[in-house]
Length: 216
Image (cartoon, rainbow, N blue to C red; front, side, top):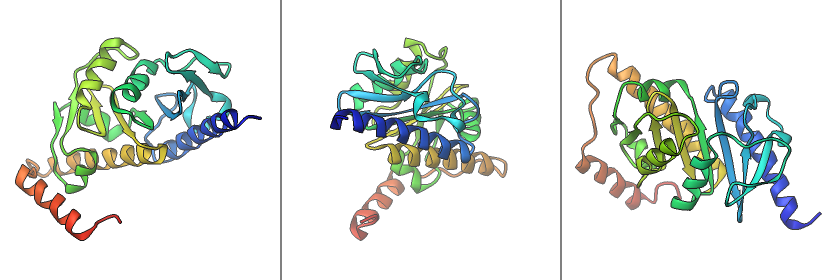
């Protein structure tokens, strides 16, 4: 087995494991959602119609940069154009798309998830909601790519959420953080109009994190 094929095989296994974890957290339901990771010039991505909580490496296919399947016996997810677009435009290492309940609820009601907690700064602060477009369409991919400008996450109107990161673990963590932030907003909104952190407050948090070497 060559080093390249071994790396791709491990990528397929890692995508399946990520699906299990996200399903266990309630972010992936049935076949709704898709996950991918980039390995050099290739992408390992979940196949269409896979029950993600039970996904195996065989349910993950490998495509080249043009979307042609080079390993695996199934067709890739209908959102392949979106995944490949994120890799091309933002140089991501991994992408997670979910129909997570809190994120999807927010996507049905807001045009933007405001920054209500400083932990959202890890995602870029306020999170845009891309206009509705049919799943798997070029229109959806284009709108979502625009919504991701300067962000690690976006919401898809009446659809779900997408996150990316430099590695698969980071993309998964961002999906979990986005779902938490959406849930926080939903709960706060039941009590009244949620307070939103203004730019000065957000900048102060960033400065404090840098000063303290937070996360190092």
